[in-house]
Image (cartoon, rainbow, N blue to C red):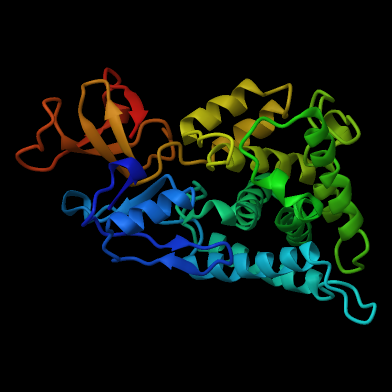
Length: 360
């Protein structure tokens, strides 16, 4: 299979990896043959790329860091919880989502089980979801990234759980924001930003009321928009004044937001997002934390379609942990636009004269 932009998809192509709805359920499953109506529907939902079946790359299968079943179940819990706060469901004075702490411990436990089975810690988040699913899928992705960072930092089990619950619920304050702001395509006004900047405190106020959620987990909601140089909000904290959990969540939040399509902009490629993070080292984020984070990110995930400086079109077939910017690739079109006589691969780490020009 290979990952391609939606504009390159044509009727008759078949979906190679499931596409998810906002509640974690499957929107289009593997093997579904696309037609013009399906393609238009995907465009309307804000989906800008997908995985398609391809005979030349049939044996190239990206292994997601997390199983689809784990993701679906977790996103469903996030979806139900956040919607309950949006709707302010209170029955006979009882607290909204009374089992929130227990439920999210179970969710993060399932994430950690999946991570424990990984042969390496190079992240490849391959799921595709609709624009409406952003808040729920984003929270899940941030938790996965934070979990990997916690493991890399050597956190113990209790620390990992505190970090994971904080990461899953860090954006719960967004449930108190006007829906119009969450889907707005125009540039935010100063008044819009004033409202949006209240969501960290809103989230903290929600989480600190739950006795089975650690106060340091709640600080992930409060501090995830604080920045290393003091330019963040709501308190303008600097460096180690920001809890390490919140630093990790803030970094994971920024990265996943960059590589996701948003109503007001297109997604960044993984390599562009990593370039942005390194440029923010020492200002928005601790540079050493950025280095640790980027050491565990697959810059060009398996099945990504690339253009090389030679003019060849290729698909990533294997990542190299020791050279994450130089994957092994399979040539699917030569510089003249024709397919090769027989498939062959290039090990980019051994061919420094060939560079990656762009993702397709």
